[in-house]
Length: 484
Image (cartoon, rainbow, N blue to C red; front, side):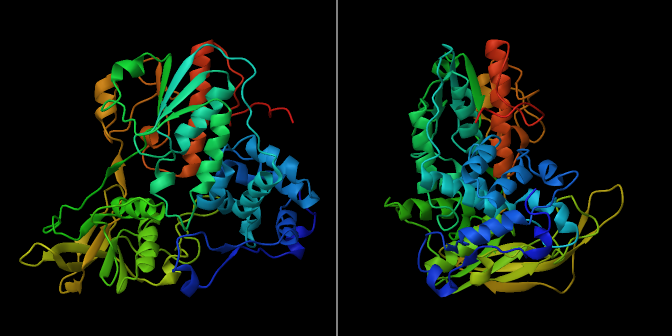
């Protein structure tokens, strides 16, 4: 694939960013795209691997060497067809996926891997610009109705696949706009929401019905939901993890997702009473993942006095850890664009107390340094280092600690079984109630966008099989490409 000697001739190139001083003044995307010639060169780097491990690295099973080869040849429309054959929404993954495919790239053993994610983004953006992405409504309707609860990537993928199979699909979203965490959990500077809107317009034109401000089991009855022939639950893992730490009830200790959601709504003109602002404050973000990084970027855009990040785990190595060799997902230090905008990062640190004043307002955090004791066959033990206590000035503490699992209300109302982590139990995406299926984070726990799309696609196939007794929907486990 690509150019036979391309990986020897061309070095990896990634998109650059606009200057920090410029980009922290707005909430728009700030990447500087590569030229068409540069993207073509990047596609030319793809090797003719005997076994393309990128396939197995990608949860969707994307046909990566195939679309890279089309880019190398200048066949952009064919590249788009190949890309969309396995991925409903490459404009999402091309911006937000951590690219496990690149970590499994064979070239990555000896050099920088292929810039798969950026090539993917450029293919889909070219496709939208050229008008190649058009609604594909089904030619025949089956008469079967399907309710999809949740409009994140899993729900949207399931809805599109089921609609294309000819079923009449309704998507229910409890928030005021479609997208789930894509909409309000991801800051606009990482993905502008017009990217979601243009895809939703395609889905609507294909015949999918969307109902917003509709919270199933609250303002939409369970009995009405049960009237559908099948139900797909894609509500995500939205139970937020907190800290059982003294003073956690202080005014100024805020869940990261509340902070991020408020800001995105403000960007789109909504008025938020008592919006949490980082302006002029000493901000401490607790949690070192992507959500923590998003809080750092948003705090800097608010004009925080200082931004500090705490992580209880050790600092990862800059290169691959020996414990995660190629082609596995590496234990490796990640420095995001938000980190580069200004933050003091701290590892192996644990919050012991949120200190508040007489009025209950947060004024400081008390911490202790820690280390992890590892004993084979036993759970890691957290040990505090004596004499390492420290007090940090803090007006705003953002808890970016991830999620413990899905909410239980739907499972309880529908009589569904859950596991010890509260995930909805399913066998081939089918719950203990035969016509109810589940996919995405609600089934597997907190995970990646690319996994959510994969889950939605695979669940849709199982629903179609349940409803019709047979299915032509594709699966990453094997199957033919759709016709060109």
